[in-house]
Image (cartoon, rainbow, N blue to C red; front, side, top):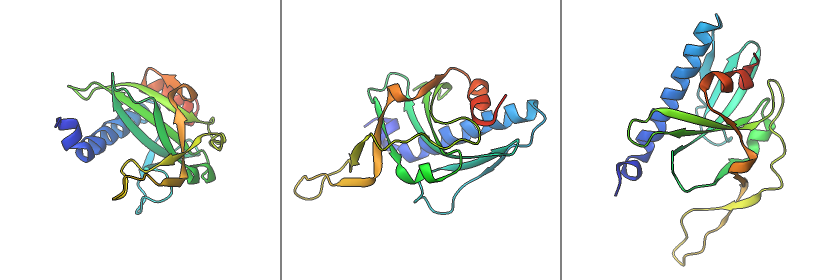
Length: 163
């Protein structure tokens, strides 16, 4: 079993912290004061709330290492109910954990998440005792091609909060 599988929760939090650190550095250089908060309960589809320049973003974070085979992500329908809800899919170096690229699904600053109703209804990744994988009606499967690619945290920051 690989370290990425065995310690996936640890890695997920580490990537999130590295990402928030990048956003804070950019905010600092722009003379802004980015505010970041975390929801107490994970039931509304977002991992972070970030505010800068009057724009509030509810952000669902996904992470994959460069070269991973996954080409889809499950997106929570409740994210569309939040002002400026978005998904950021972070690709990182498998060995160094350096953040490499960012895929963004969302609207511009102050704009809602575009409709994701066209996506397939997601299924649980693990089956019940009979092997049946039940549907997850609050999640839609979105293809990587529907995300917008950003090569740098700064370019992503500008998409999130404006230039």
